Length: 468
Image (cartoon, rainbow, N blue to C red; front, side, top):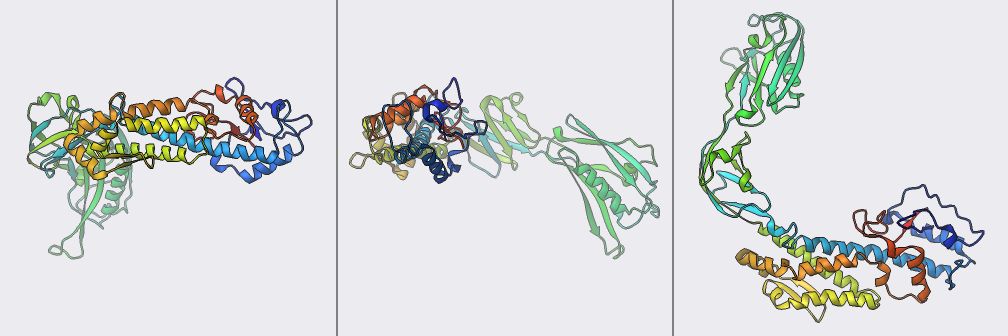
């Protein structure tokens, strides 16, 4: 069935479309179904059955049920495609306009010696060059136990004075603190005790990695395997240093008996950046340096000296322009293929005239306006060359106020406020257009609508809802 909706009242207007005595089994409590999942054949069968031999009460025209169903289907298909292509062009246009969140604001970092460091810049980061000297890389804390015979049991070991029982440990890192428990049995082997402790540590939500390392030493005894527990911070830097203390009173102290000690201490990387005060940047702790005032992030990879430059992101700009031109050409092609009326003709003319007004400048940067075929295409090689050589000029031609992207965004914005029926071809009965505009309150919907019919959920505007 067709559910006729208005901003003020979303209930079914049965009296408007069902003649007296017509059966209406519509369940208005059901959720709207996505247009892509509509079983059109089943819908049409129900419509023909409901409307066969009946008139649309209170209307000044008689429309056969087959024509009604056919035109409903055309409205759904056209409106869905039309709004989808309008929204695509609007989004692409806004992505390259100077005053919006433009692709021209994206940044890339060009490093002379990538083996020394890598960099990432935020949008709108200051465009400039830097000289960087990496003095020292940071290190991650590493704690180890002594090497112990793997298959000796706790009760039989001559090396370890460990009593069976439950042991508790507190582990601290950054502002986090957690406690783990370890149950030691008399017949546990040394390797089993170390593996249980490693598993408990790995379960913590901390930047820690615990593992049991094995070593065979044939020079001492080819039958012996030695094991040690290694606990390492997940990131370099003093900020990621950790501490493990034993809370249990059982035995003489498990950690002490295992010989757990710090083998490598946590250190920070050291870097000098020209014209940047050391107090105005800081290490995140894992050889990543944040220059917040400059919108720049550097990650050290090796000791050495290099230079870097913050530039406009050329790949992002090229991709944004190509998407805009493709969306523009796609909408023009879609409009050309429709059975046109006055409003659709005017939209098609406006789209092409906007491009024609800047035809010479667009061609200069690699965008061809084909008047004969009414197409807009990109010469990728010419466009890329212009982006590399004079990206600011490309930005002005495409994104300045009053230029093609700005005007395309405004045109699509205004078109999305209109009923799709304004842009459909004229049906055989003029009153049919008026019936849908009035009965479905199409002219009263705001751009957000109440649901997405017949567009996708994130698109604006709507035509009408379908329920079964």
